[in-house]
Length: 227
Image 1 (cartoon, one colour):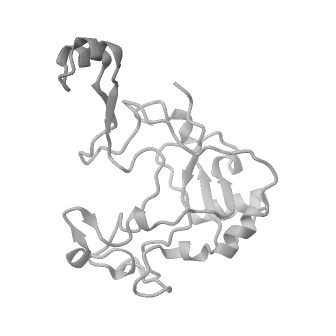
Image 2 (cartoon, helix red, strand yellow):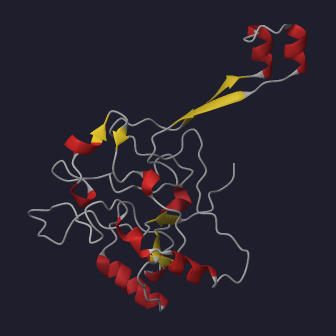
Image 3 (spheres, rainbow, N blue to C red):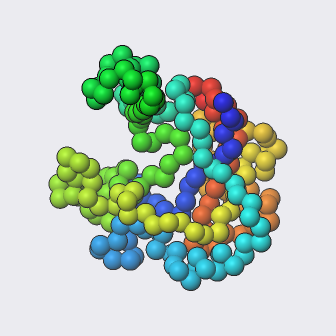
């Protein structure tokens, strides 16, 4: 089993859910891009900005941020959401025994058939949270309401299907390295000051439209179920 290549938490430049109102009375964010907007700060990414970033590429090196999916992998299941499961639906031997297509022993012996299936909670492993993932007072990003836009098959607004292909400058914020650590302690809450201090430590400035990757180091224990 390979070790996951990513030690990062993909943050992406999605707009924060809360507006600037006091936390005593938080409200969902309203888009400066209009009442129909469903993607927030991803509007800052344009064909022009994507082209400018692509002109900076000087090698073909790829950094894979994907994590491996396996039975027993870490996941959020405290609220009863399903863990990752994988199973075979068909095997060559089983097909010979069951003969599901009624083609006979000779054909089943000649053509081997293997099929599989997976079941999982969608918020595990490498993923991006869409802007409808969290809300306040029956509303999500930009004031879309559950009464009007949440059906039996999911939200009709701000789903993952609205997220465009993301091509932007990536900025790694290595918080534990700035603190002289290999990884942050369990349940450590990264603060705004941590981010500012790390950027200063790295001599890096964020610019409009950047995609931010925050390293915690916690992926060192990814193979452990309780990591």
